[in-house]
Structure formats: structure tokens, C-alpha cells
Image (cartoon, rainbow, N blue to C red; front, side, top):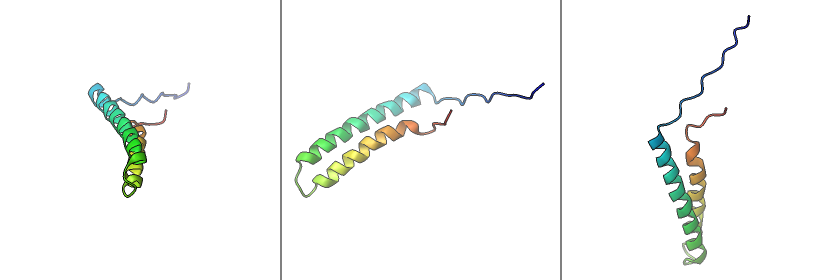
Length: 72
């Protein structure tokens, strides 16, 4: 006989925490798109900073749901 064992699946977060993370991600993504649009038409002195902030916000929207994720 073999001593084969299956590792138990990691427990997922509470549904409320997962829903909150999804809502925050959506707000960050839409806010990032808005900042990118504002940065394209804003005052040339602040436009690069607003545009870069939009890219950072949209990037965080994709990274936030990965917190606590594990490879299966």
C-alpha cells in the first residue's frame, strides 16, 4: 500500500470580504480609467501625474483580488 494523501483545499475568505474586495477593485478600475481620461485633457503641468495615477489605480484593481491567492 502507498501513503498517498491529498492536500486539503485552502479555505477561502468570507463571502463579505470577497465581495468587498471585488467592489473596491471595480471602483479602482473605473477610477483609474477616469483619471487616465482626465490626464489626457488636463493642464499640461499636472497631466503626466494624473495619467500615471490612473495607470497605477487600474493596475492595483487587477492586483487586489490576488491577495491571499495560492497556486493550485
